[in-house]
Length: 560
Image: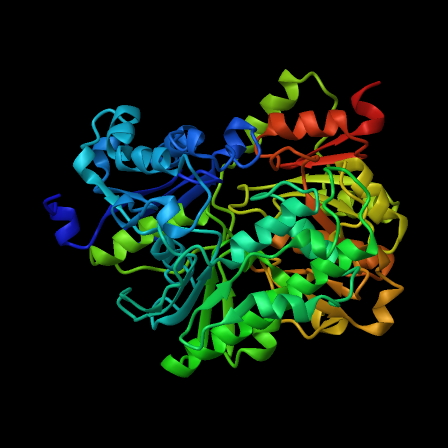
């Protein structure tokens, strides 16, 4: 594609698209600034957008794409480029890579024809404007080029299930947005695919429920670590080998929904420990090559917050930043950022995770009127919510733009009192989740160090675990996991003034600067995104109060 005048000037409008595997998404970068990013599941209401099978690879994130353009008031003709987070020219046949995926060729065909599919979706788009960005480069850019370190460069580590022909990238971005790759592990060796295999063996949904394995690991002991160390090894050249594991020899296969045993928990703990060990060694080797002080992480494995904390403790890096949308959804943003950097745009750090849809007060009130549901506009929303929480009510919190990525960060959240141990079971019942799964705390940033230790602070994106100090175990039992840890979100009043004031009001009533925070959804459904989604969730779940924009809906008055 011939460079346009805007590209020559380093001022580009770039749409990023992720579609091929899972979590299809779109993102928009204009003049180096991240304007919008959203996952298709938030529009289609289909968890993860589609399953990661070749037959679904043709599906584009159509609604997310249209919203991103509308959010910026752009049309297809305004775009300088569309960045697609996969390069079919780098792919090889699945059997040549040692993968059992006989229909993978169909996936590659769809990827090769993506420019035509996108031009059909967006009238006025020249197919030649579509740029293929290698999958792991898109992951790497999503973190290094969105991080606080973008202006002076950072090391980058990417690990996931698979890309075109690799499962890992270790490299460094310089201050100009140029990537030097030191190592890329070829398939079939993959820490992400290994973890997916275990997920399926334990009766969970692969490429979806890996976080459940991480939670289950806390209930076990790593007594199979010797067997796994034999099968999962470092090469000494910056890569690793993952040989086939006979999971049945370690613990019986579980059917979906079946009760797990101690053997299953011990197996999860063993794989989790080996994953942490390998990640630490990979990071240490990268640092020895670069001498860098800042590490950025992306890829599905980077959503493993337990492993992330081990990296903070033992990798030797001064600071570690993880892309909040570290999974494949984030590659839409990364692809756009990489094309922007290549085009000469000066990139600025990602402004936060609240990159999705938002609604005005007028639009929210119109939705409430359409639903013919009783509502009120309190003088002090933060105090009203805090009062309900202090009285042990469950609150659905819908404020501002929705989050990009899998974590609820105080925009689409379900809140509860952390001092009641029964609230863990209660929330898992509300959401229809397994009872071994923890819920997380959000905490005032200035109070976090009094309550949590070991993990990095601040921690605004809920991507690390922290030890709960001994004196606080009994005070916040609902958010203290069985191993004494918590996956926290720190709340800064500068960034989140309403949320911080609600926490302050709750502390004034209870003495606790912490509330339970879990995602506003029920099992198997995407996180709530629109006012309609919020009302449907509220109407079908035993939630006491819905705080939506400046309004509240009380269960006691909504259905009388």
